[in-house]
Length: 76
Image (tube, rainbow, N blue to C red; front, top):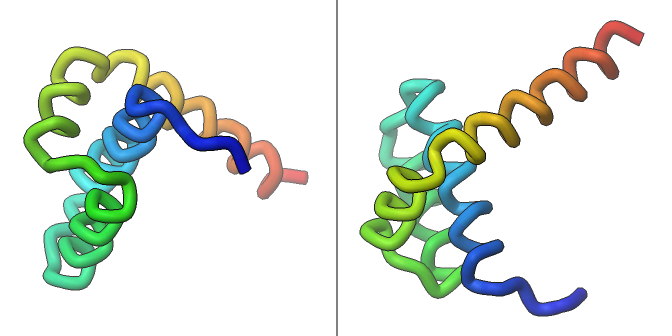
């Protein structure tokens, strides 16, 4: 598997953070998963938050696209 760029890692982490925000998930288990993801990706929450603030439209668009794909699969 090719190494991801920092931009790609930030985008993935921002998608996770946005999805967690939307779901209202805030338990310690969710926090542990998010923090573990940041550690694995070599990112800080501050970096992800700044990225999400500047790229929220693209992140939301990607999440909506995945959601539509999943809805279509479930309807089949």
